[in-house]
Length: 236
Ligand SMILES: [Zn+2]
View 1 (cartoon, rainbow, N blue to C red):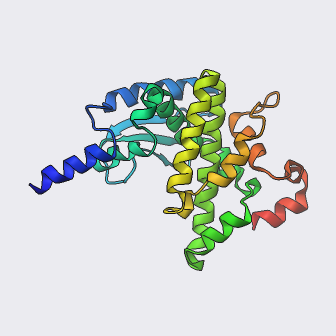
View 2 (view 1 turned 90 degrees about the vertical axis):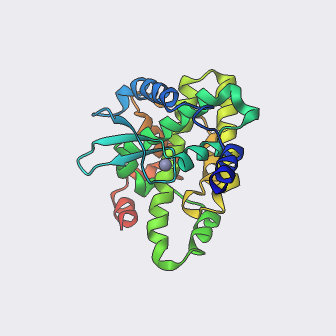
View 3 (view 1 turned 60 degrees about the vertical axis):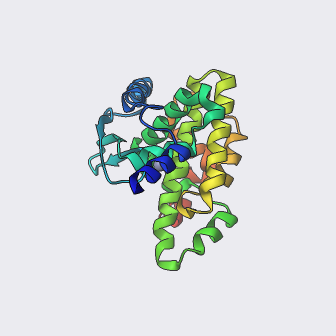
């Protein structure tokens, strides 16, 4: 009886394996990893596995720069697709999933680590982070900057690889999900900064990698990147 109630709850809150088979997500992931082949030195590997983490898609990033993307077939985690996918946007599911894969690819890009010091957070976001307690703030700020960077890569991906109309819908659904769930999870509350990014031109400069474009879009004053004393200050 308990399991029946539990599975009903999952069905109501997000897609099931029948609605969204893992093999389908895997096909989309392979496609996106290949589309972005020029963005990394070493292609992320991809595994489908049942893991304890609460999200259906994630990456394990190694110190040597290698990156493993995981499609997590844990049933509770799978229902979390419901944050982004619902009956109203069913026509855009594949594009939303592709953009989610691009977010994970973002975590694998070199600039996800090297560009951290340039990422600017608003006062409002910093004060929201402050409310979760001092000892955790530094860690959460780092996580938030990584998430914001990955979200920015995802937005650039949508703009470059999806039809313009679809890209608009996908970016809106991503912003809506971040706005809706951000306050419950301050370290992933990227809505304010992401809304600013989306209002900018997402075009790359000549020769710019997607990661470098994301860093530039998240920098309040990109000139600081070339000012050694500013870099030293911010690197602390
Ligand atoms: Zn992420």
